[in-house]
Amino acid sequence: MTPSGSGPSGPAAGGPADDGEHEDGALAELGYKPELKRTLGNFHTFAAGISYISILTGTFQLFYFGVSHGGPAYWWSWPMVFGGQLMVALCFCELACRYPVAGSIYNWAKQLGGPHVGWLGGWMMLTASMVSLAAVALAYQVTLPQISSFFQVIGTGTGQTDAAANAVLLGSVLITFTTLVNAFGVKLMARINSAGVAIELIAAIVLILLLAAHTSRGPATALTDTFGKGQGESLGYLGAFLTASLASAYVMYGFDTASSLGEESKDPARNAPRAILRALIASFLIGGLILLFALLAVPDLHDKRLSLDGLQYVVLATLGSTVGQIVLWCVVIAITVCELAVHTAAIRLAFAMARDNNLPASSKLARVSPRFQTPVVPAVVIGLVGIAVLLINVNQPQIFSVITSIAIIMIYLAYLMVTLPMLVQRLRGRWTTRQGAFSLGRFGLPVNVLAVLWGLAMSVNLAWPRAAVYNATGPQHWYLRWGAFLFIGVVGLGGFAYYWFVQRHRTGVLASHAAQEADSGDATTPAP
Image (cartoon, rainbow, N blue to C red; front, side, top):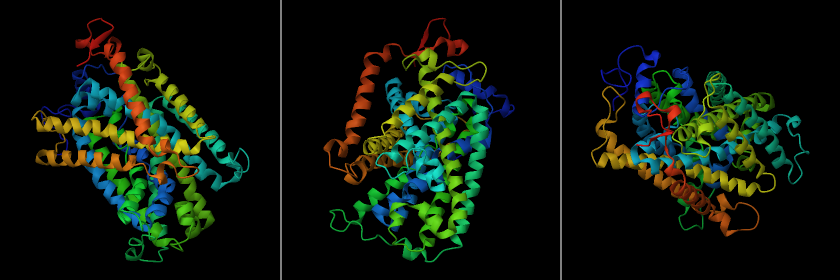
């Protein structure tokens, strides 16, 4: 594969990279005029990708799930998921330098599969992002009350709805914060995000070293212990492992955020592919080592608290309450910047779709604030939707967990709506890369095939009607077990029906956002 370079006709070719001339030219080729402020450098774009993945948030939130369903041997799902997602990320790298544009998933699907595929991919990703905004916000409740009872504002935490109601309160505060930060401009967002990522990376490395210093067993013991899971099941341990692998699949995605900020990045054709790969590889290495040394250092590998409280228990039991609380504060910072990245990516996606007149009230959603040079209305609307989704958690936490799981599936499906049309383009001989740009070369086709197969397999695995995932507590209901198929069917088919009968007749670049040569003075410019 060939990294992006400075070939004579590549998007990063010629002239200083920081002047934005070549990036704006690539944007004009897609029919858009530059409106967002280019202020983000190498670390900013890397931070956007790695903060969305957010290793500390994901591992601390889901470690218990992996261990409880697959035993310590579930750790092997981490490199498995990384291998599959790496295939997807490599495909995205080729697209990131060819189409350095906001709302990457939507625009890539549109360019590769046409406007209908693009809209459906964007709609699935946008819906999933708004639910994910609420899901990440709930992580405050998992961590803050463990630091101090001060954060258990509602009740004592022992009442039937105390935790759920308090989670909504803390989550609403967090979403309000990310709404304000995103409304005040990308520069402020980037500074907070980069500072938070720096703290998260340092804390993660220190945590790895501390856990490594307290190891009490070897990998051969820990990584082969299955806790006897899968006994009596038709698939044996494989079935248990596939269920436990969701703990890894729920974490390792969102690396495309680095490319979704392409219109606000300096030299995105060069920096975005690097940021995507660096974010994914760094997350794999750091997260894998945290999980490994946690299993090697926990005092009792068979303590029930390992499957109930997860990494929080490991840290407090191994490192003591003082060090443990410092680590938990770093987790809070990680949750905050993760939420900021999720919100930022959703805003750029909504802006990109609205700019093509592909959402209700598109002219308002696509408006860029002349003062802050950022889309303010989408920041507020998405924040309000996130808080509204949070309210479902008060009395129906099980339904919310189902919707959250489904949101992850929708993101994997949205990725498929990019990699599958890309594979079709390759098979038809229509895929070409620009000179000097990132290219997989002769490996492009096999990597693309593996990316599609991985996306299909993991989507089925995520959606499989398991009681452990979709009906874990309370009475069993068929509509919860089959919630993935029902919810995605309603969102996908209902959304596309709306697009087909209403929105597609209006679609086209809004004149106020069209490149000069594409602006004919009409309300919209026909979509490609």
